[in-house]
Structures are given as C-alpha cells and as structure tokens.
Image (tube, rainbow, N blue to C red):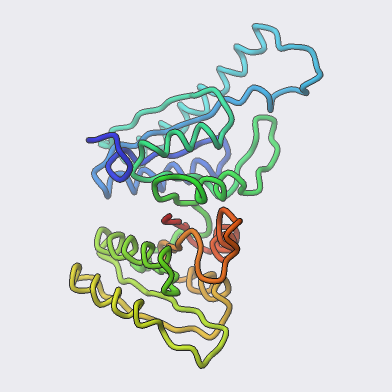
Length: 273
C-alpha cells in the first residue's frame, strides 16, 4: 500500500465523543469496502486543558490526561475491530492542534473521516469547525459523518458545471461503482428557465461510458442548491459536493453550499477538492 493521497489508509479523527465513535464505525465500513487499512488518530491538545495564565500542570496531572487520551484511542480501536474484525487497524495519539495534525495525516490518506461535531478536551462542543477546515484544505477527499444511517444504495452529487463539481461528479461515479449504488446528479437552479450545462451532460455521458454499470440520473431542481442537496440527502447513503461551485467568493476556503450541507445534510457528506 503506497503512502500517497488516494492510495493510503482510511484515516479517522476521534475525540471521545459518541459522534466520533459513529465516525469510526463508518470509516471501518469504508476501509473494508476499499480493502484499505484503517488509521485512527486522536490529537492530544494540551493548551485546551487549562487556562493559559493558570498554574502549570503537575507531572501526575499530565500523566492522567495522557492516559485519558490513550483510553479514547483504545475505545475507538475496539469499536472498529468489533465492526470489522478482519480489518487492519492502526491507532495513534499525536500531540498538537487538531486541524494541523489532521491535515498532516490527510496528506498520507486515501480518505479522511471526521464526525460532524465533537467535544473538546474539557467537554466544550465544537460546532463542526474541524470538518469544515479539513474539507477546505485536505489533499484527499474528506467525509463528515452526520445524519441518519440509510440503506438506500444511492449516491447523490451536486453539480453545476464548474470544475470542482465535475471533479465531484467523477468521484461520485467511482463511489457508486464501489458500492454498487445508483447515482443521482442534482443540478439546482433558482431560475427555472436555466437548463443543464452542455459540459455537464457531456461529463455524465463520458463517465457513463467509463462505468457503464452505474445507473445515473440527472435531476434539475428549481431551488437553491443547498436546499436541493439537503432535501436529496434524506434518501442517500452519501452526498458528494465539490469544494465550491459557480458564483462563490474566491476568498472563501469552502463554498457556501458545501458549508451548508456539511452542517445540515441528513447523511454523511464527502467534499472532493
């Protein structure tokens, strides 16, 4: 197994929350499907554990905190092994801030998986900032696990003819083929007179020739793209979007539609940069 983007392990970040353990189970299923190893990463972030102006931690206190981190990682490993006993699993605890550490791990992963929200080291709720940042910057696809588990055998991808959406479309075809699932390409237009971009239709036809066993349907929806994709996620196993589409502000790391579905979709969301 080459340690390069696209061919490395499925990597999942854990923080001890129930949501992150659900992400571990999803990542284990995904690794088994891809015949890839699973890498579980917990980030030990010391500055979050005490006030910056407070007294330094004693050695025994630090040891206790590190033992808690090790226990979080071991619990996640047991959950993965229970889900997929035959799966090769590697677990590691790394020091640092979550986003830089996980971005570094993503450089060697085929897929990065995180929960939609989790807890900080003292129980503070994180409102999805880690998932958004990873989705915007990671070199590999990022899946934010959220919503309800579905068995719809359907992949949904948001498309608008932009280069990021065409990359997402190619990835969606591959994911549908991997799962033996149907593919629905959602083209949302707020102006009902707008038709699908010819480049989009050509791309669907091209990928259809590449993967002829994938049933694909292009649906044009008269709605805001975020609304259309969130609604479509209710009947999907996975929703795939590009990092940004047409009409976005170039200064933003991640497009507004991608951010909206990361926060509100009813199934796991994959962002393909």
